[in-house]
Image 1 (cartoon, rainbow, N blue to C red):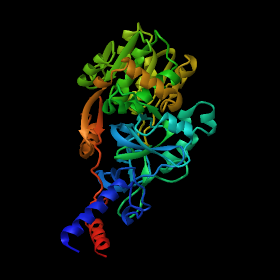
Image 2 (tube, one colour; image 1 turned 180 degrees about the horizontal axis):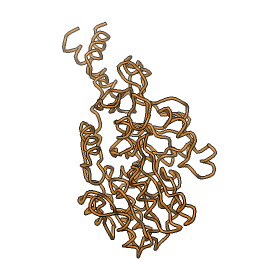
Image 3 (cartoon, rainbow, N blue to C red; image 1 turned 135 degrees about the horizontal axis):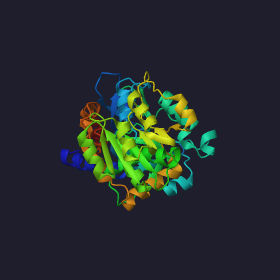
Image 4 (cartoon, rainbow, N blue to C red; image 1 turned 180 degrees about the vertical axis):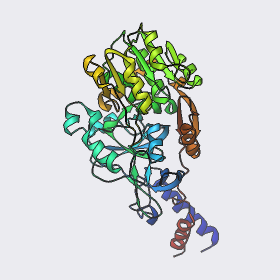
Length: 438
């Protein structure tokens, strides 16, 4: 057989291979051989190994969704203080793990035996946003409609870094070792998300800016809608106006607050707060925040105060800032050894309510949050202060730790190039050549 003839036969075989979905023989490095239809068999993810060690980009086998789960091609992932607490070892969590828990992306696959109603609601190609609290839908609290207290989420994901069968979906490509998931493990090119934690993202909303809907806005919405039960005309103070706090300002404005008081120690953040709905600003580094809030509210205090930092000082300020009968809502996560103090006698005599709030309720609230953003009641563009590349995630968390990020930073995650293992690699061509010559 001539070289030219053999070459033509090789090219015909390559063409046939390209028309077939994928080779029936999985690459041993990415066993069990799961591929995204028409795409790669592996992806990259940012791995946290231990406190003090930078995130590293590692190759993973393509995560495989199971029943009721979707594989999402991640487009953007927000940079949140909760992740930072994990990276600094302030919140115990299984490692190695992939952090990142507020994402947007595109549906690329459904798990086997996923119900038809889920497939119809989220067909392949749908744009979606994911909530960081991923309710199981079946536990005691989910059945009661309190999905923000989902037993499975806390028992499996937050306690073990897995989904609700007790297994992670992330495995290193090199050796198959498991890597745990903080929520969906969104700081990766693909992630697996339970359908209960997703909402359709309309084409009118951009991927990058909309990523914060799943945590920063989701947390703010839960705090004011459910914990505070805020009503139009209420006065609201927000202590700490970073990513989540600035979202609280906008939600308070959208819900009809009469006064929205932003409290922080950085003038730059307070200036930004004015653009997001704050009617008053207080620099707590220059004046007594509690006294200033009472001055603004004719000596009474606000109807609702929200603490968004997770520090003992701001916890106390929040509790002292509310009027008699008011509600102090705590949403800032603290390091494991931080304790807050409160005046018990005032709490009892003056009916002050101190309420913890972790987030909203994905199935009922996330679609409403998307509608708020779509209507323009929530300004996504002004909330995002930095966009960075996947490879710049480490520097984003470092700047977050130093207080250099005014609002919210978002990592834009670009798609990986086609896998070098499919179909154009040397072994593939050599096998074709041998088959042709034989």
